[in-house]
Length: 135
Image (cartoon, rainbow, N blue to C red; front, top):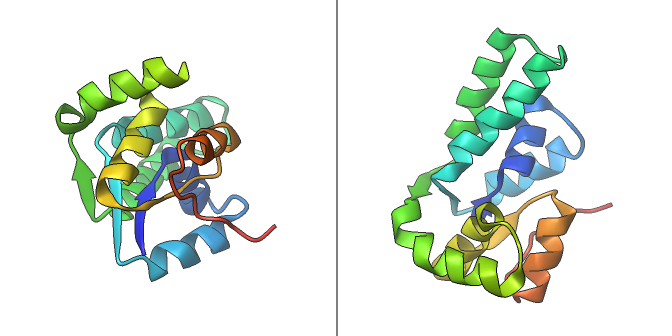
């Protein structure tokens, strides 16, 4: 299975947050794990929030960043996605950063691995596969 990994799922995976074990199982079974290049900045931003909140140290954040980036086999350039992302964001009245994952998945024939419910609803509306996790 081809997977597009979003930042929410990557953060849960590397920080051991629920449902980390299920997410890691899906990633282990994937034939390839892809992400748009904004993934790196989104993961770093998420980790920054944990550091500022005092939930993890800066060193733990740095290690988690490396671990999250290592989950991805290939990054997809925003330059290749941008025009389509902008059109879809306008059409769906949804932030463009989420549409990067959707457009990447559609182009690559992949399912999106996310724990972001809002993104999941959008993907379903767009008829883009979402990896379903056991509840």
